[in-house]
Image 1 (cartoon, rainbow, N blue to C red):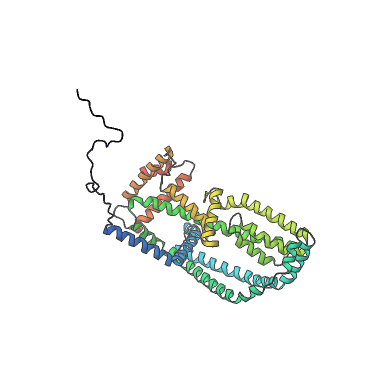
Image 2 (cartoon, one colour; image 1 turned 120 degrees about the vertical axis):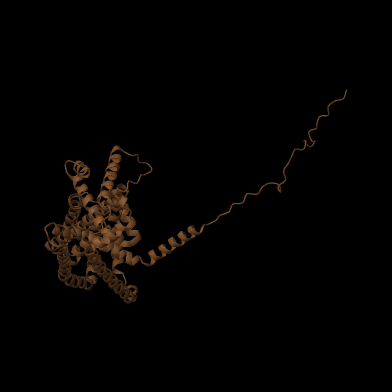
Length: 423
């Protein structure tokens, strides 16, 4: 009987079917860009290039729109009292130019004079400050540093810096004047420009577009008017305080405080430092008085004035305010910090008005009711504007949005609006 031959441990296992690497199919990945995609990419690159090149022009447009948002409520108030729109615009802008002229006439000569005197008195002021710091062992090194400051390096580059600064000031004045006149033309041609905007947007979105424009006007107008009021109030308070305490250069320091107050929360603290330095000449009692009163005013402004002046127009949490200020200041300096809050408020308003669904948010019953109300308003708008030109349709959309907002702000809520739409 034959025994079955068992394969040994070192023997080669039985051959199986193997596919050679040449027989394997090679997978080729090909990227093909369609002509339409190439055209879109070229258009995006061209738009970005234009955005960079035309950035100053776009900035002038943004400032002009801010001016329009600030002045529009006053013009609308005069129109409600049966004043023609052209006359109302002329009166408002004339008052603006007169106010700017009076402000420059009353403040700039005194400001230049006091600033020149401050520069002339700088060595004596620095010597008094050094002596005051030298009286304490803790601040003695700082006193030595002040006495040994040399201005040779600063003076060498002063001429070139002065020329660059003067050119920059001229550009700012030119852009500012262009923004004012552009705002004037926008307000004069409001109906025509609004008609062009509504002509490029589908009519199913006109009601929402009108509401967004009204909310933007409310945000911008409230913010800019609030800025003017708070800046004027802190400048007036600082001037009265410094004059009462006998602190020199009161006008220059008060104007600086008003300009620095453009930056919420931190502007007042920036203006306290120069005031304390100027008050050192009057003694430590005056320094303490100025410090305490300015801190008290800052607390009063943040707790009482800002909520009453701005109201609920911005509706921004404190953390968003701080982040917006830091981002705007880092990107565009003082102008960026000035525009940061209305831009942040506008972005949050757009998210709310356009019904953008955030990843962590669920739809509520109020959102469903709001969407149904939007659909009814859009159907009513399309029925009323059937066959009408874009300019007239824009006026109807603004009127319906205004009526709806008044109905939402009334004690009866949106019942009046829904009733008017049903009728």
